[in-house]
Length: 247
Image (tube, rainbow, N blue to C red):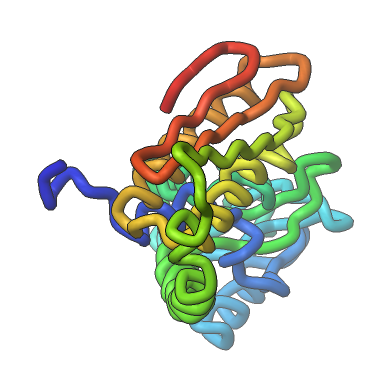
């Protein structure tokens, strides 16, 4: 594998972490009936360039500084936020992997995305590119210390076993159509392999491929299935019990 093709720790975390782990909360919001004049003070005092519009906790729109500037350019006659806001809002669910959040930000060219509950649509946070970077850096710092500790404790497991051939088999149940648990099996497998002292380059490659496989299972498989990983001193094999996929 070339240096360019090797997955990094950041790439691995983007698949593993959820929107809820990096989002900003509580969120500065306005109501549909808030006046545009009042909006000016909200944006200025909080030093933000836009804010969600909510009614009884439900996200109903987004108002940005660009909307405010356009309102001023058209004469600045008094109006409610509801008259100037964007009603068709692109949002992400709190349990979505960061890889999907990053993709949505890039696809739409937004600086931020509101984060909502999967069931009910209640606004729970906002995620920006800055939030994602800060969250990844925090996770990197914590993860590095834990990774080094577990690798030290378990790196010689195969050397300590006396046998002609040794294989460890791990099973992880995947619910199917349950996005709240998407990636949980892959996350547990990654932690287990890390504690066994698997080389970080191999660990990240296995983790990313397994995350993608599990998300595909969640999207396409109605019934539960199983991830199976076989770890031997010379390699790792991971399979889906129903579809037979081999990352």
